[in-house]
Amino acid sequence: MFSMIDLYSYRTSNGRKVSIMLAECGLEYSLHIVDITAGDQDAPAFRAINPNGRIPAIVDRDGPGGEPLALFESGAILLYLASKTGKFLPADEADRWVAIQWLMWQMGGVGPNFGQAFHFLHQHADDAPADAVAYGRKRYGDEVRRLCAVMDARLASCAFLAGGAYSVADIATYPWVALHKWFDLDLAEMPHLRRWYAAIGERPAVQRGMDVPSRDEMEKHAQECAETTTKETL
Ligand SMILES: N[C@@H](CCC(=O)N[C@@H](CS)C(=O)NCC(=O)O)C(=O)O
Image (cartoon, rainbow, N blue to C red; front, side):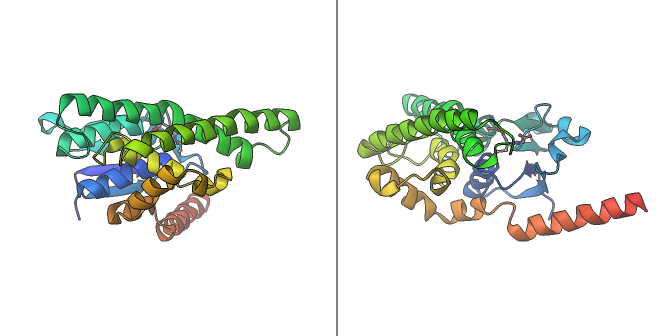
């Protein structure tokens, strides 16, 4: 099927934000797997779309004025898709700014700090000095717990991060909270966050978006890459 939107992504929290949003908006798209473990993000063709060399990115061939638009930064992509479809961003001006505020809070706080905590817990180099690893774990682990406490307090008085309505702020934050077990976070200790996490996890579009690329798609992509490499080296 021909789709107007190309999604460049991988099975990570930042990538999943956009696949959830596309599923929630009911937008068809063509998926291009960018294997960030194989360095695909540095390929010149991808750098032409995202000079920052990170997933996710999209190209909307039916962008503003009918012209193609390439976009990177998951927060910008969510706002663009919300503006394109009129979904998941409140129409009321004050409510809209509150939703943008919580989206920015995710982009500047949750994403970077959860990402660094994950690195120091699970991805650091084998020869990284033990005291540096311990320092990183404490610094970013403390920040992850603080951010979760902020969410739990906010969600004590609101159904969703931006208030009464599900929005891009929730879509951006959910895939990071979904990693809670990797951070040894016990959601039972944060009942409001746990309630929010369970409610969002029940949404069919969220379930579809979280599984992009699927394990089958990843395997197929890896096989295709191996075949291309074999042909090129013969
Ligand atoms: N602020 C960016 C962060 C993007 C980002 O860090 N993506 C990661 C995957 S979650 C990536 O592409 N990593 C590749 C690398 O580090 O080389 C966004 O939200 O889009």
